[in-house]
Image 1 (cartoon, rainbow, N blue to C red):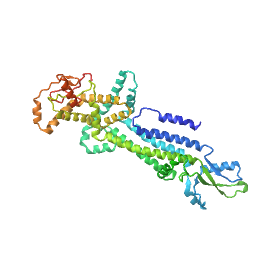
Image 2: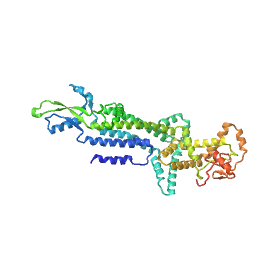
Image 3: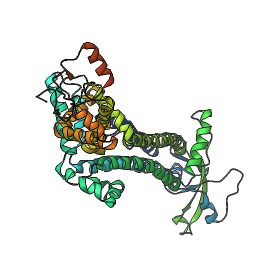
Length: 483
């Protein structure tokens, strides 16, 4: 089978567009880098099996069989390099200082590099499915929701995603560990240091994902160090010099790291002469395979530097997305407050009966509780990962569905706690004044029925609450009974 027939197969296998439970930077490591390494492995393998891999300058009286033997023996044994102005040393030990022992193993080196690039992906998939939820499944469902023709099918897929995430974040085992998380400092430290301990602590996925990001960074560094060992060169210095030489085009000058002219020593015994001792023969050879190796490893150096920089950027980007509370809060708040669907629970407060300071505080506490207590870090990570792989419209629907579940289960109690906290912090005289005010809400489009159009416009511009009133005399429930 011609090895070049494998090139379309590799491109189809690794470059096809499929749903994945990661981001573009992860795919750059385990998908595109692996495809590039396999492509180079195929090309170097084809060059090794070709007839032009090495040519040695044999004696004039050598027949064709001797020349063929010389080429074979010099290729499978190590050749060594000497500069043009250097004499051939007499001692064998002095010659071995310039041995080249990598060119026969170049395809295997590239395959090993490809394996190292794919290992973090295997670890991510193996550990993520142990959590009880398959991220790839919900991302595929989100992708299918964009292609279905019937609205009912779309709604079913979105509801499936919402139910799956709600089942995970509202797991009874996780709720049972909530008190432990608040009381044990050692448990908090462990959940930050070991993702396996965070399986029911709400940080399993976020810790594992950031760990995989760090592994991708160290993977590039490790491969560069291994290339220094395998090639017996300073790969970083070689890559920088090759990058500077690219101004001359692909036909670069000979590099001292990948010499094209080498020397070869081998021994022969001639039985027809009475079995004389081994005779050492030294020939000069041309390693044409090193012409390809130099170009391949030069391109790999440039590619790895790009991947290394993008991996660091990706890690910083996801830390900024997942760790600081204000980024999580602004993301969820902007998503919730811009909803216009009447079946999504919304908080509208009559500005005559509830001051806006209280309303703003309660809104902040409800969204905070939704992020920290209900979604937890893992639930928010699911949303951000869906944002990276699905359409913005689908993610908006998923957030609205999760918000509705939160309102049904916890929002009324959280709103009362927020109101109590508000007055406890500011004193009780405001509570006494406010408690004399009677509020009767008849909700229609999330607003009181008796408001004029001017008041409705003012109320929409000045309040962004996404549930019902926090007044002690007002029930907290969705607008639509079928939600």
